Amino acid sequence: QVQLVESGGGLVQPGGSLGLSCTASGTIYISYGMGWYRQAPGKQRELVADITSGGITNYVDSVKGRFTISRDNAKNTVYLLMNSLKPEDTAVYYCYADIKSLDGIRRGYWGQGTQVTVSS
Image (cartoon, one colour):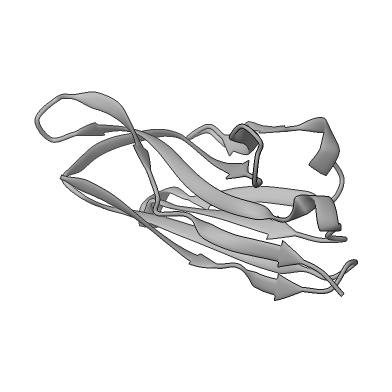
């Protein structure tokens, strides 16, 4: 079994910063891409940013220049640093990881989600 555990999030004023982290644990053989999605009330879940095992990153246009994704492969951990936060960034943020477990099965895993609220 593989689990993703997220931490971070919370309430921040517009223009502020927050950091999220997500650690994968369990019967991990290979960790491929990892990333962050978000879902605001009444909206579909969208990709925020992702990163390959080699460090290649991808961002949705609305967060480019404000958010930074990174990862520590040794710790199977992915991070999201969010700067210059806007009210429209308010959402539940979900960690995602593409992992091959020790039984040879490759599939996607999701974290439990963490609330980010940007409000004055």
